[in-house]
Image (cartoon, rainbow over all chains, first blue to last red; front, side, top):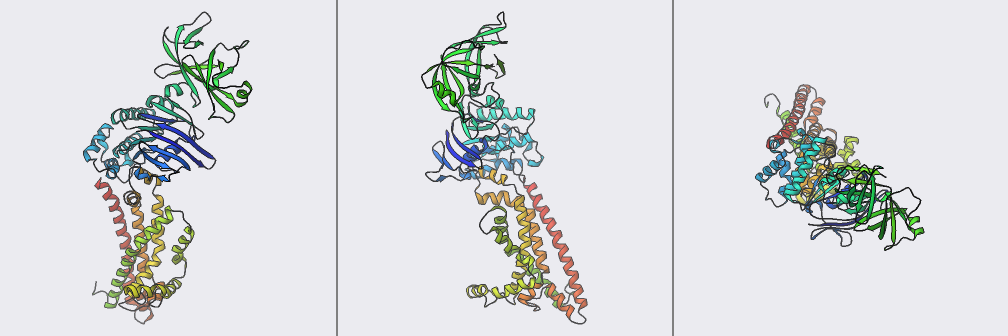
Length: 363
Length: 233
């Protein structure tokens, strides 16, 4: 079941104009708070009506401003897990769990609800009222309740916000279980990189109401610490701590020199390079202190989503992709265009181990 | 009690209970609707509707009664239509007393219910709709149960107001023993005749007992409503 959406929405000063797709597994909407992530999923749920555009889930069109389609919230069959759980305070946990079932096709029995409660570790809580649950327990019930309404898509809006570290780990494990056992596609909103890296197979980076980039979380998010444009390249450690303390990494299209690489020789490493840490030069740079220069080719130029004055320059270096962010003025002065050979001067990189732990290395 | 109360006094008590119950129950559906509209919907004329609902609270009751007489009298624009279509008469009938006391209690009922609706978090209603509940089901399964204590409070206020209504009732339907003479009208009438103080005093006691009883019953009902929700789960 694939979700595709292209919508616009003006909310006071804030303009949302976003275009993205989400397939099976977990797709994360990642970005700072206020970037427009929640507005996007509210639009998918039908709780916010876009000014224009189209939202489609699988075969069914949920919203199309041109065809005048706007499926009501209760007919969309999209499960929603809110940040604040939103359990019904007048109903028991069991009744909360079964609430959605009576509106779907009625085939969810008490037994199904109990089985779901077992899966979510809620067995002992069924007769309790939401008021007496902890934050983590309430969020479990909310997840179960959404799942039992048999949604075609499950959306989670920062479900871990407001939980302590231990509870967070619990719920993360639970969401992984839901992803792997229940198999419903999940749209997951978060501003926490570690959550996205752990859960998501696909990430869309949302900033200032637009989708900056989408792709594999490891490629887009590793190391950067901010939701900026970045690319990850594969490298192998070929020389460790030479006499001046630098290690050498070989890439498909060149070499990188980094200080203090703490890995065995021959180890495959992921190296993340943020677009704003890449300078471009038309000729092989001379008289620069920078050690790391890669010969590349420009594959694409596009308006930067993060700044109206910048251009994102997509590069190819051997088999790897790189991105650079330069000002519009520089791009014009240098006459940048696709297909042009160019030298990328790299100011710093981040090393990504397979475990997802990052060290930012300044060069 | 029939021995203790004279026949005329007993009539007044029975009629008052009948008038107040009918007034409260009949105005409840409209009260729920208007309270919900005022709490949740923004529409043209919102402020005007609010003012209109509150009008009986601020107008002199005699004015409300007179306006009802003009509007709902058998020759009146509304009363005439109702008489021709359904044979319903208001003026100088107990139905008129119910209408007058219903109108007078309506602002109190709407205020209490509106506050109860406003206290229900719309986010819970949103959650219910994402789970597949249409608007009516959201109202029936989330909004209404959560607002129930406030709705009961509104009913009791309206009932108490209806029991005690005097000005609009006596203007609209006069003070006819056995037909339109409610407890307050009867007390008034007894106080106008020499030697009526004793009857008046008995009715005053009855009003005090009924009023306290209504409040107690409402407490129990509200607690039952909450308790039943706990038990069923």
